[in-house]
Length: 236
Ligand code: ZN
Image 1 (cartoon, rainbow, N blue to C red):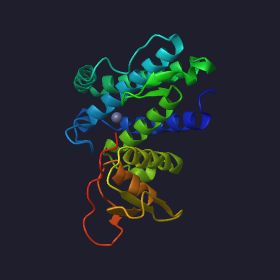
Image 2: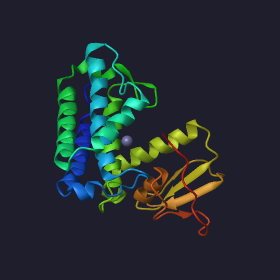
Image 3: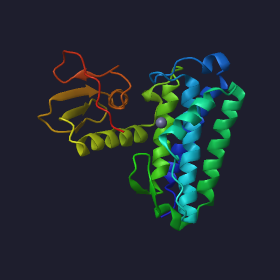
Image 4: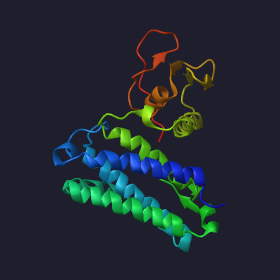
């Protein structure tokens, strides 16, 4: 198996989408609030940059066979982000560019057979390296919206949204979350989750994915039509 081409397209588009936001940010804007509680935009940029480095380490692991985890520890991961936030905006943007370019290089130089090599993902599960392209795709698209400067899940390509929502529904099912039913309202009507679920949430693909990813209840309603939509359970 080689790198999945359609995913490589999505991850590169997502990286460019994220990067375009950074052109408009000066120091003041980077210090502004992101959509993630307690994180400024600079935290999000630093996290996404160090995530590229972490996924690059998994590519190195696959290429060399020598185990190199994403992060040495949770503390190391958090300390990196805290330090990244202290950088001036141009240095932080450079960090983002360098990390994205370096990850891309790792992927391009990888021998075909390495894509199936098992590596440990962020949740501690062993997955084929090929899966990390999707991990990164999800990361750049969702966190670009988290930068809180006007984009939304509506800007994320439909195939990416569909796969994110499928991941979340699958994660809930795997953890026996008390039933949640999701109804996608047009253009394609899709139902996910048990029919007798305690919670039934309706909305467009973008609105439902936004809600399911824990980013608020804008645009979704309860299946009953009235009442307040509860916060979605965690999925990662
Ligand atoms: Zn993340």
